[in-house]
Amino acid sequence: PSPSHRRREATRRNLLVRTIDAMATLAAIRPSDSRLGARLKVGGTGGRIARKTVAAGAGQRTTSTRRGPVSIRAHASSSSPSITSAPDGSREADVLNALRNVIDPDFGEDIVNCGFVKDLRVSDAGDVTFTLELTTPACPVKEEFDRLSRQFVTALEWAKSCNVNMTAQPVTNDMPDAVEGLRGVRHIIAVSSCKGGVGKSTTSVNLAYTLRMMGAKVGIFDADVFGPSLPTMTSPEQAVLQMDKETGAITPTEYEGVGIVSFGFAGQGSAIMRGPMVSGLINQMLTTTAWGDLDYLIIDMPPGTGDVQLTICQVLPITAAVVVTTPQKLAFIDVEKGVRMFSKLRVPCVAVVENMSYFDGDDGKRYKPFGEGSGQRICDDYGVPNLFQMPIVPDLSACGDTGRPLVLVDPAGDVAGIYGAVAAKVVQEVAKLQAGPKGSLALDEEGVAGVDGALRVQLADEGGMPFYVRGCDVRRSDKSATADGESKKADFLMDGVTPVPDDIAPVEAHVVGNYAVQISWPDGFSQVATFAQIQALSRLPAGAKVGA
Image 1 (tube, helix red, strand yellow):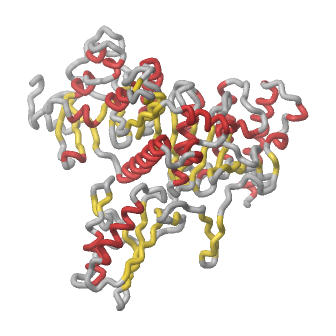
Image 2 (cartoon, helix red, strand yellow):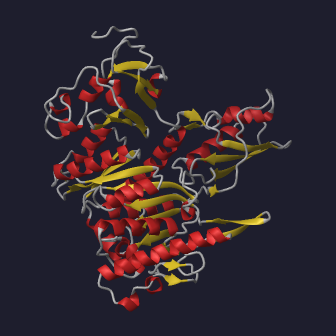
Image 3 (tube, rainbow, N blue to C red):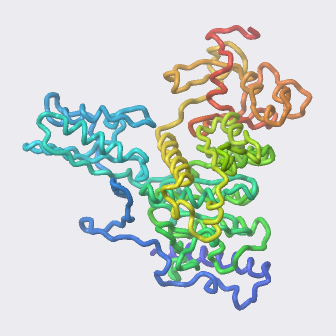
């Protein structure tokens, strides 16, 4: 390493030592125990994520043990080009035409046009070999792709055999170069509730292990230093984090093939410290951990929308968020704040998990002791596309208390099936995000609509053809007013007195994932408007007159 690199690493290590020393002082820990080495074992290899090392040409690659009938190899090298066409009349063209019958349910396109088909080879004897490079190793329809591809190709008169190799796209992310430990992480999923006690950590852990069982490489980061949950909910053999004395990198501990980092594994349990110090500690633990190659890093977010949450969202390019709630209105009020926070930070929410939704009695009836509607309201008001209602099951909490998540204890059970559906939707929604937004919204600067404050909208569902709506109509359609029980609140500016003017125009607008637009208005109001909500508004004809 260069001298400048060594200086940066030394500064990073010193900052982490000072942060934990300060924590030790606030927690009244004995000074002799306040050194970093007392809680992060230096050197060694214990606790590292187990990998198989496989020869790959002149170098080596690492893979994880896969489960299931179809194995997908994730690779970090540059991939070969997609094959979308072949000379007319050739056997390669026959194969591609056959594969066009296999449709990706997320993109609505065949796997050839999606660019999944690579390395196509056809022998003189009629043996067909090709690669399907999917967006993620945890693709929930990979077995179906494999089965249908073989079915359609072997139906060709001349085809004798068909060999399908499954791979995943190379690891790429938007991580800053300075965050070296996270360079191999493809997607970061935040699991958040903004309210304590709703089962957020239970959701995080079971989601992580479900993704792992689907074939993905997964890590979990417990961002709650005041009440870390992972030491209780998992049972790693090496329950203390380790730090490399040369590089200063923290090595995650490991349980059942998933890398885990929690302040609870630093040897001090929960912390007692002020907010700025917590943010610094979280930042250091996130950025100095050597996560290796991961398909998904699950962030178990702490409750609230304060400094820690903002630090995580600003330091990391979070791919998507899963929101956890319970049926009560009180939970909805807090969770709504979290959805708005993510929208402001341009983090799309892809699913709502409503815990403790119901239980089925011995009499065959379904009971909802905590009411209903919180999760559905979040989906309706903010356009979150997926809702999952979890039953009240004693085994779910019991497994968490014993350190072995329910999806590992009973992988074929009903609750594990729901978590499987959650994981599948997370994978699918992330794939959709990679394909680009479903729409756009901008000020009609060219005056096509002829109305002050008009907005130009384009939606993929309508073929991308632009249409125009009034900015005031978008503002008045805000859902948060109805959620607060004040139906006329949306008709007024933030002062609560001045009516929304007809010519109001947004200061800024940006797309949030595939479902909504976050709009900033001149009076300081931040609105989350779903595409479905905008689509239902009255439209302006092109060339409309001012005041029409």
